Image (cartoon, rainbow, N blue to C red; front, side):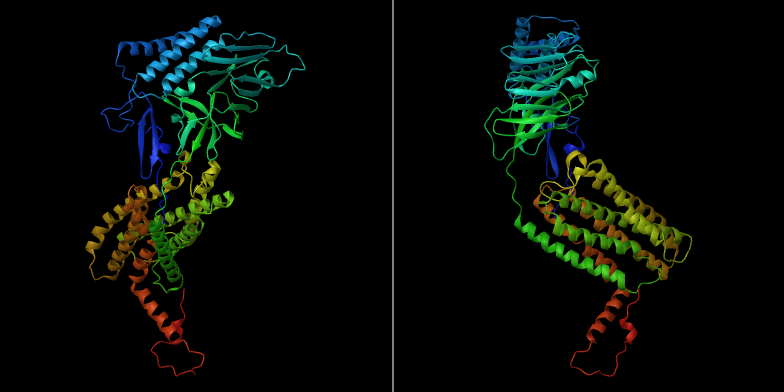
Length: 595
């Protein structure tokens, strides 16, 4: 089977690369690349949380002075509460900050965007434009145009005409925002003000490289910013629509994505949360968002996808069919063979049954992505079946632990451990709860674009990997306790005693089974080479074969049952033959298998 356990380290640990670096997931690993203008020491090493990317190392005092001036301008403007500047002064300050920012980035030697510099520019421009907004009781409209900035401002107060339109339209550089400003004012003591602006060249600093995607990305529109003034309550009573004009021509194969600029501590990046594209044509895209911020449209185009290995596909199919055949034989053996009364096969039977159903569904349903609902159902069922198989493996180890505990008390080996109804409740109830909670928390986590399995976004894959890791760790602890407890007990027994022999054999079989099932899945975490991919496919698909060999062929009683079955099959009368006297050593009841 194909690898399903590849971890997206970038999703599960957003800070794995440290600040000012972008993380890109690869099969079995990941890479960290510093943002433009940043570097890691020593040269050639990869950035990490313990070895983060360092800020621009200015080779001259002029560069250091320019960055220092940018930070000083930002602090002075942000700390000024009643600042009032003429339009010409605002224009000059903005031009100066844009030029200094461009020099800082270009002189860093790498070119391109800079999240830190872009954020400073954004805060300076928003603060400067907000100084032109008077706090009045009547509607106020104002537009600003400078060589580097264009802004549109609209305000309304309690004294507004009854026929005032509810939806307000603001426009800058062919980009339009549509907002119900009256509804916002009703939630803010009757007054509201919206500032809609676009700073020329901001998209070169806050570039598309800060949008995490497996696809190739490019900035498809200007970067615009919409901000509510006069209020601390920035929640919107209804979504806001942005019509963002495309900077380049239409793309037939591209995916248009509406994003907003998110700053969380040292982490700055483009995010899609709360925004989505509803209409897109060759000239513009309409985005609807549940909040206000800095927005843009990013175009995603698919990277060259590595072709599937046809030999690996063929090996996967053959191995899966072989594994399913032996799993089916194991299920039939556990169901119909006559077992020693002291052997409890409940966990073993349901382990084989869940694995059989899981691999069968995986084989026929993994690629049925044409119907999203069916694909989600298949992914959810696979999640349940594979989790259930691990729970049954844990229950078998628990049964062994209870058996060994009884053995230390010199008790006879009977059908040890939990009763069957409790085993069924735990074996199927636990994975059902996990799947139910996972589906409730993130319904979109089931099914992805290329296969019907768990989505790796937002760490959803850990709803499967988390319980699996816990079960494997608990099993390891239980086996250590079992071996530690069992050693003095079996040593004190005579090796010829049947109870000691049976216990040693049971421990060996369950330990071998757990190692086979656990190691097969652990291989799924390491898929960086072709050899490991083939090894994972072969070992993981043959779990049923190992179970059949260990628990059926290695069992003397089962082998005797197989001999009886074969003898019965050989004695079946042909249609044209007359009955012959029974001279066989087997009686008729030998062909009737008891449960």
